[in-house]
Length: 130
Image (cartoon, rainbow, N blue to C red):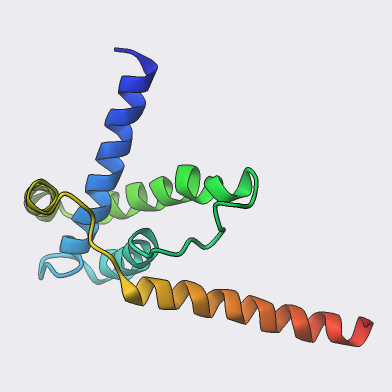
C-alpha cells in the first residue's frame, strides 16, 4: 500500500470519526465526559472557521493535521464499544447519503468568540505599554 493511499484512508477514517462523534453526542449510552469532550471536538471539527486560520504558514495546518485527529482519537477511545459501533454505522450512512459532513454554526460562534476574547485580552495587556 502506497503512502498516499494510506494517508487517504487515514483522512477518511478521521472524517468519519468526526461525524461519529456528532452522533455519539446524541446517543443516550455515551458517558457524560465523552459527551463533553465530544461536543467540543465536534463543534470545532464541524465549524467552518478554524481556531488557527489556514493562511498562517505552517501553524494554520497544525490544528487540522495534529490537534484535531488527536482530539477525535481521544474522544473515540472514551466511547463504549457498542455506542461506537452504532454511531459509526450512522456516520457511514450519513456520509454515503449526504456526501458531506454536517456544519456546526455553534462551532463557528465558539471559535469567533474565542478569537474575540484573545483580541480583548491582548488589547488589555498591550494598552499600558502603548
